[in-house]
Image 1 (cartoon, one colour):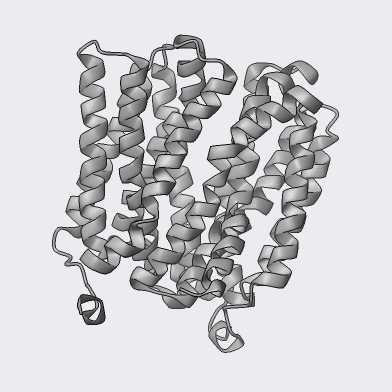
Image 2 (image 1 turned 90 degrees about the vertical axis):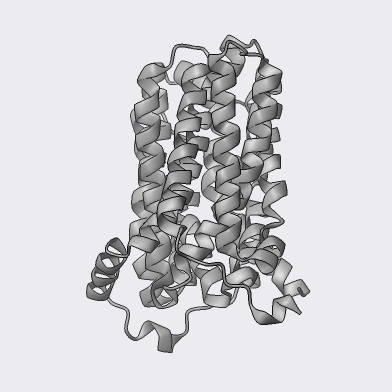
Length: 402
């Protein structure tokens, strides 16, 4: 790998991290926002959900547009929209304005979620794509590792509005990097056959592709398990186990560190064993660890150190599942990579939202509903991988075996 490979991973990773950064830094601010704007807890949470919803919907729009006009123009539009709405959020006078601006901000952030994956597919396939995807996720994962802690410091120091000024600066930085460090990867010749009608046909094609949907849902349920943790962990770890917000941020970051640390072996393992084998083994390991965690909890062992240790191991396995399924889902759809990446991202967010909605009513303040939701997602991902990949053999290029 040369310097340009790492530079590209840095730029694409930062573009991808804009949306998660605006989520993870925002989490510690919810109580302060409610108090400052005289809003209920539900109203403050609505500003988070509005961002989630638009982040999912927006990907469906950006994918076909990126296929039709190229990768960079919609990225410029999305980042500018995100930056302007971030300024608006920082100045929002009431909760209703904040919720509306968060929805628009999510539409801007969606560009950074879907288009970098399409760029990876434009440039590489197979284990090279997996290597670039894992490096992209290394940068991407700075958000869940550092953002909650940085957010808590900012809120204590300058108040919740400072979070939005910070993400505005991040968007401006991303714009500068996009302009100077990322070339256009969708050539004019490749755009000729792309149109709105073509996009609708592409979505119809993808929705009938059982292999594509199966691989996407393996990753989607893996990500949904993390959404369950995201939605419930602060209440469980702070209210039930008594951690301080700072200690909670460190515990949250440890799982992200495990995820991204193990994900860096994706390219090497894919090159040696094939990506399909990596997915099969990793998702089986993930399901085994999370099922064991649930059984331990049901047996009455609800110690915090045990739960955190098993989550750490489990999310390490998940670090191999997510980038490999992203690469495999786009492997056969290079001509419509933007559209395929968009549908994949939307299905992931919709799956995560549905799972959070299902688990939410069972929350009782203890860890058990959260652990049960995580384990259920892991088992569904495993079953989906068995059904989808049981007859698919891993392809290891001959050159890699020499």
